[in-house]
Length: 231
Image (cartoon, rainbow, N blue to C red; front, top):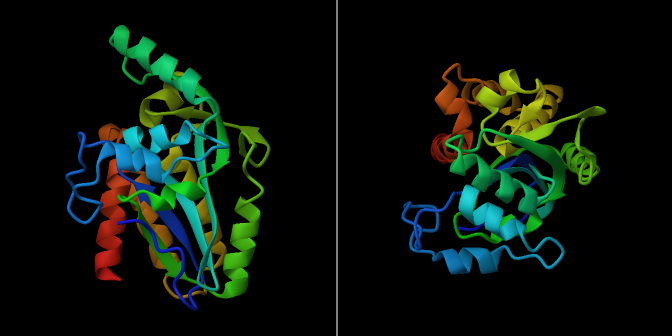
C-alpha cells in the first residue's frame, strides 16, 4: 500500500505500521497483497541502518507519524539497539524453548524508510499545523535515547510477560509508540477526534489478555484498518 509522501494541505499526527512476514509473498488484502519479501526489504533499505529493513519485513513494526503541510515530517519508533544482538537472543531463546522471552537494550530510531513498505498503513488524525510541528519536533529529539523522561527502558517482544518477570519498564514498538502519542493526544483534547482516538488506543493497547498484549503489533494493523474504515 505504502503511505503517501504528500497529501496537499494536511497536517496530522498518528501512527504508521507495517506487517510481519507472511511467506515469500504477502497475503493480506489491502496491505500490499502480493508484494514479495525481496521487494519489501528493498523498499525500506537504508544505508545508514541497513539491518532495519529486516526487522520491518520479518517482525512488522509500528512508529509514530507526523505530517506537516502535506509532507511527511517525522517517523520515529522504538527498536532494539542492536539488531544483531536481538537476533542472537531470539535464536538462543528459541533453541531452549523460550521463544522471545528476553529483553535487550532499546533505542528510538528514525524509521522514515518504513513508509515505503508496500504493507505500510497509517492512522492520521488532523490537527493544526503548529500542533503537528510541536509533536514532530519533540519526537525527533528521541532517536538515540534509550527510554522516556530520563528513565531507561528495555525492548522486548513479549511485554505482558517480561515486565513482571524481569523489569517493570519494558515495551515493544507498538506499546511505546502508543504511550507517547496518547500523551500528546491528551494535550490536544480540544482538537476534534483526539480524545476519541486516545481512549480507543488505550483500550486496545491495555488489554488484560496476555496473548493480545504480546501480539500487539498485529492487533495494531487491525486497529488502523478498522479506524480508517470508520473515520
